[in-house]
Image (tube, rainbow, N blue to C red):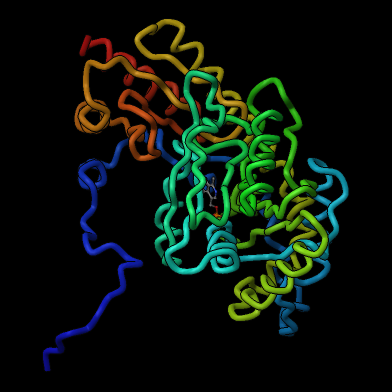
Length: 389
Ligand SMILES: Cc1ncc(COP(=O)(O)O)c(C=O)c1O
């Protein structure tokens, strides 16, 4: 029997077709893929017994806590101590991923139809995560001329804005929220009643001169939620564990935590074995994080060396993270170049417009690929551009 009249909500888009670049990649998967973001597929050495603690027989008993098991939260607090000073485990709530953390925070802070301010360029998933919660992600601008500082004039006083998101270091620009911008953002939040959401998934991955990047976890002046997770912290996205650290004025923190606990209690989405294993994972996973950091640093310096011979391409040096942004001359549209590289050179890169850059003329490369593949991919990209000049 055919059924008619079923309604699908606008939280998912009506046009589900893949974009042109994805369609080309589907037919021509690039052997030199400079878009990989999955650290488990790029020959990073993981200790063979890293996941042994997941088999702890304690995991046979189900005794959930909506904020996450106390020992797991203590392990996160201890790990975070490295960046932000002492963190009270009672201010930590575990989620299955940072994406889930966003969804909990949007439920906590927004009515349907409200707005959160998100940086542009940045992580493209914001729009989607916001839409799934029935809210809007409204961009504020990061300025390329000033090393991606916040353009304060674009932080609009929208009547239904509830929160401002910072990504620190930002994906894909690798830029940090500098001390001056942090002050300005905090005072805007205080004046306008916005919460501050600081996505720090890439904080453990400095690439520039500053080796220990400063965290928002101790921000006490406005209601602040700082996010991190195993996906980037230990290069283990498949374990599905992330965290929200709440800070700010005490009465607001208390109420936010109680309400967040209620949201988390409705899902109880973090598996018990990964919570039990967390202290051992955070200790045993250090060599993995070190290997990822060394890989990104190595590929970044190799990128610098290759570009020194190819002045057609210039680099916006990242301060942290797993990616780099290249400026290309305006001889070809980003999308055409990306398709050319796939078809003729077997090289995969992302066009800037995927990340909402302020204009055409940007490419984004991942710093994760195996060094030989990375170097060859960048060389072919530079040669292709030179051939177009
Ligand atoms: C800035 C940023 N935040 C969050 C995430 C997602 O992390 P998770 O796997 O914990 O959802 C990513 C993934 O690339 C990211 O780039």
